[in-house]
Length: 435
Image (cartoon, rainbow, N blue to C red; front, side, top):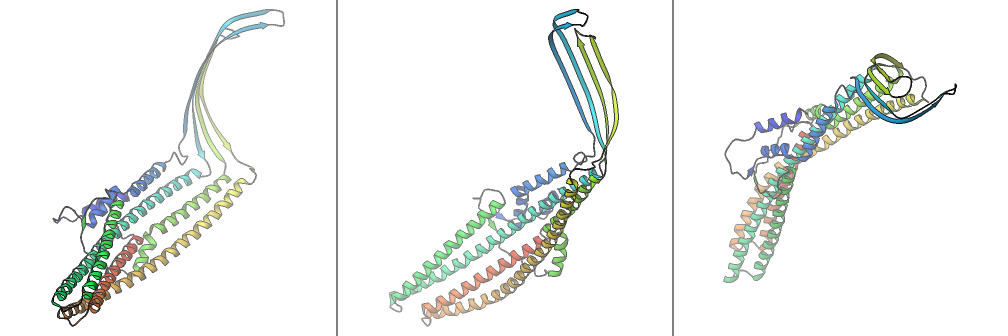
């Protein structure tokens, strides 16, 4: 439970202080907002708090139980009595008044060390909810980072299609002018109009995707989904991630691996708890009782008792139909299953880490390659555009060079975003997002 406020403070301290437009949302601000507002984090934090409350000596059975009882009764009776010597006695409306009260204490002195085992189990359960809270926090941070850079990517793609519209709009202007002066055909103007409409449609679709991604980020931040904002357009990529160092951190910090190990620890404690039934139980009891009885008929008109009691009782189960033996066997099987699950989790996490790391390296290479390819495609488009203006290049050639530039830019942005997403996942798995 201590993990959450410290992480929130850490992000708050690193908020950028430079002046900028109010509607521009930085990544650090988005992360702080998510930590403050996200519903999943709040629910996980509440579960962690509940586990902390449950982790007490009383719930483990270490403390005594103290109970208070009390009662009072009143009755009115008619009595008829006949003795062996022939005497008879009758009375009506006899009043009886009874008062009882007591306080009792029961304290388990020895239960085969089960109370200590249960206390350790409660501590492990609290630790498990803390890990689950950490998992929720890091998953949310990863969602925020991924959505934030998705917005940047979508925005840059919108700019790509906006630039494409500008180029095809210039083509329309040149084709229209050529048609007026007789230097080009109507077919060129129609082809330019078709391409412009296609670019406009792609622009509209991309703008919709950008808006939907902003809605998604607002949802993760648990704020008004219609809130408009801008983002900083840099996508920094770390190029220093090494698999061996990542795995070293993952094997220690990864929440899934830590949860599987904690589950195995809990299974070991359950097995120990099952073995405690082999020992006897010893309880200490004490109490104080008060009783007062008043009657208008009978031998005594008043009877009053009060006093303390102290005792120790021991119990040991000799035979219960092999129930305890079966419970111990099942606890051992559950422990073996927990060990297998821990090994399986570690293997799955390592395989997933390797796949994500492969994606990271591939997209890192692709982004560098496509960035260089954009420069070549831009030069090719500049040459084709100049030839188109002087009439030495046709519509198909210009459109093809334009499409190659658009494709290169889209491939570059896609590779850059996938590389950032892989980087984010690698850091999430290794516990590096909080840094």
